[in-house]
Length: 382
Image 1 (cartoon, rainbow, N blue to C red):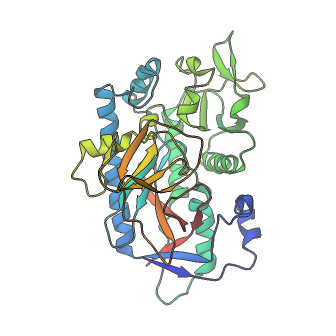
Image 2: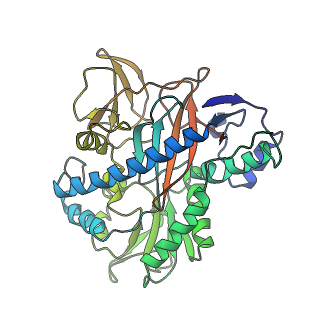
Image 3: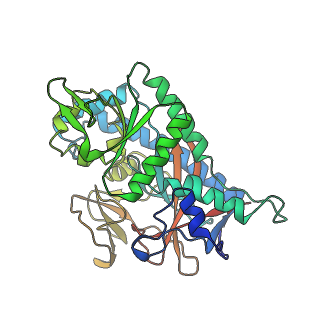
């Protein structure tokens, strides 16, 4: 695995904007960065794919364990919602996607940092933008050594929506896509997902999450025209939904939500200690606990996002930390050896879509903590 410096396309801003990627330079800081790319070997890709499938298997076993042992309180799932989560799991409700964030440098075994199982972003750039960059940077016939990109995310998403259509046969009306009003990254992510659903043959609508209503007479969720919302994909975390005023109405199960309710178990970082307890010999897991660890470790809020409120701790001293709005409870994870490529620290986001490991995206930073503005850098392999 190497980091290769390359000249950006002269008109790259216009190109990526034409692909729906309008948030390439948030707050004046480059997020999409095609001044470099990561060059992986075929064996690197094989190793990442193998790790992703094994992590998915272990995560599903961990969900079963949490349900069997009634560990919902540890995961901050309200008691009233526990049976709902169980029912969702027992029905084997379909999941669309998730992203494993891995520490990997091409030399050591990939290590799981966390699993973005409910509302992962960086999807448009992984599935579409880096693919078209690859086609421009490595046109047919060049270079001499053929290269490829580990990326069938788009095709797997279309398959996932076809599977969801079959699984939700009998549900009337379109599939609604929803995200916070005014959040351009979330809006473009759900717009891309909506496009893949339409390519799969589904009728769709968009609605801001704040505009979803509850019709008390009909006892169901509705849009602004009072049409029932029978199926909905939300780019809005379960832990937020469960604390909204309408949360009790979720339990009436009048709407089929994606991601499914059982995914709230995996989207909580409390899953990290559970995974380690269940599979302590796994080469893909870092030691994790609900209590501080003796050696160098990371403290993470169970429900934080985008690397917020993370602390790196060594010998009882905080060596690096990020700001944010999140507090405890926390989990503690062994500090992984952070890859360093000329001062850049990459994290591999490995995508699971419809049960398939189907591609990666690379985020990098010049600090050891990947945050909201850490750059997305494309990749190839040979």
